[in-house]
Amino acid sequence: MSDLDLVIDRVVARIVGYRRGRATVAFSGGVDSGTVLALAARALGSSRVTATTAVSPSYPAGELEAAREVARSIGVEHRVVETEEVGREAYARNDTMRCFHCKTELYATLERVAMTKGSPDHVVLSGANADDLGDFRPGLLAAEGFGVRSPLLEEGAGKDATRAIARHLGLSIAEKPALACLSSRVAFGVRITPDLLARIDRAEQLVRGLGFEQVRVRHLGGRASVEVVVDDVERLETHPRWMEVSTRIRQLGWAELEVDPHGYRAGSRNATTDR
Image (tube, rainbow, N blue to C red; front, top):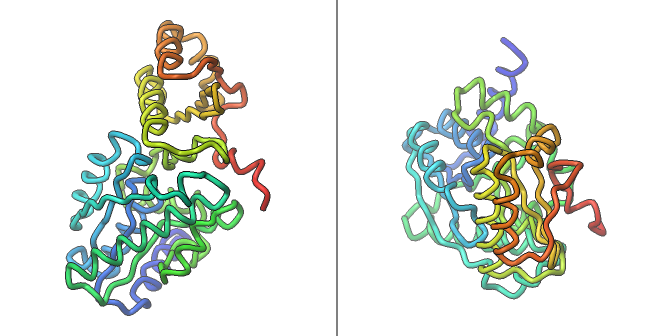
């Protein structure tokens, strides 16, 4: 048995060890939560697992259908709920605890839905992994408060191991770029609004339309910064349609636009966070 098989067996055993009749997976459609979804189905049986995707102005356009397809391929029920974090002042003011308020809204919603559906004997699972402990993740505090379990994190599986598990299980999202809410593109202290998130989403769609998968458009007040994988920076800047697309992005409401020469960096906004 390989080391990867051992990790899979440990995660599956941990989910079984929660001793709950059903599992609700907070499923964004990304690699981490998708891997947990597949392992929960293996642990409990697909009929006892529900993938729940929360939709709000902070959820990127186009991700929902992809999430549906992944849930369908795993064979579990897929449920969509609407969350209202963007309309809450504690979230909209966008301080360093924004993710705490987001996850509080999410997990409270998941609990209400589960009770409404008559499934009190359930556990909520998240896709948090061991590498998240090395970053500033106030959402983990919210998870703890609601009794949410994170089997990958609890078994010490980090990002690389999680992708390896996804490949081993044949998940279509195994190589999918990291997924984060649109609010993560906004500098702390700048107010979050549905209009701003829609602008960011549209700008990222325009860049992806040029053939780039990993894209972040950071809102820095009157300036926007475009991040792609560092090896793709030159390709973006020399793309024959970049001037056209950059003009269209500025027309969305930014006076200045730049391409970050350092490229995409996961968690880069947290570099200035007072921890």
